[in-house]
Image (cartoon, rainbow, N blue to C red):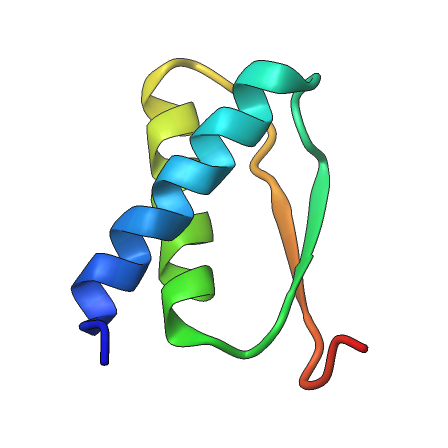
Length: 65
């Protein structure tokens, strides 16, 4: 089983690649995974450090089918 920290690192890497390939995201829809939530928060912190005035909105849905 992967550790929560490793999952968080994978989520941050995924979001970083998504931001490189696309325009700046305004909203993401995630499940209730703790790694997804903390990864999204970390991306918002990084964007704030680079001067992005609007954080990415996170919408949490328990089941993504």
